[in-house]
Image (cartoon, rainbow, N blue to C red; front, side):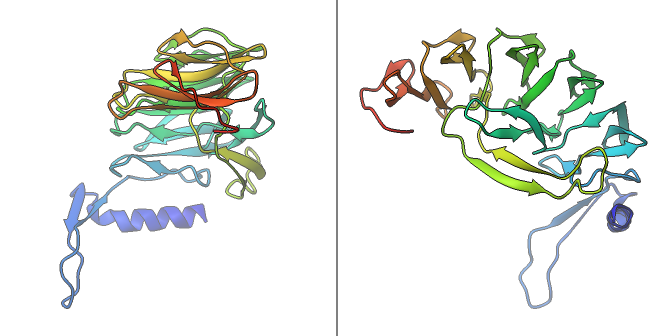
Length: 289
């Protein structure tokens, strides 16, 4: 199936190899002209591609995928092969970590930045994990639980673990250690079964949980950052490197469109939920946010 797919892709794109890009309008004699379609050549794909691993940037001018050679996996970005690893994690792949509130979550996957100039993925190297950002390896960690670009693609942040401690690494700079850094309450959780990996020894079919909420939240201008953390039985937010007061539970974080304001949901010891905007706690109380 993979070979057939590759042949189909290459066959469709052969006409654009020499020109680089072909633009044409598609319409019939009886129809008004439609929007032009651009066809790009992605070059030759590897023979054995991990199902579901092929991605492109938002402009569809770059591509990347995970390929298999023997018992190793490696990334292919715009036709250039990367270093071999024991495994490269795909989008929405499950792992054994469990949330404080008892639901498994998804592995980070391979991703292009919003401008298409940068790319990251998480790889397994022996019994350690690393983030590979633009082909450069991070330090080795016991786990990497979450990774993301800032909206403009200039910064990369991820949640890592060493031993029993978790911390955020922003552009290579390690933050303060906590007992956990996790999704806040109120995140939407979807359960699904991943059939893409069936028959591949390195990635058996499993049931997964996808959490449709970020852990690390960048502001819209990419200059501010916030995330929830847990220390003992208390939970708090870290906003631009500064801790808030502790709460019993923490909810979701949101920046205003102009990036000047930040709001989050939290729960006090009496189990009453409320909203805080720029550090000012709203007086209204709710059963849930």
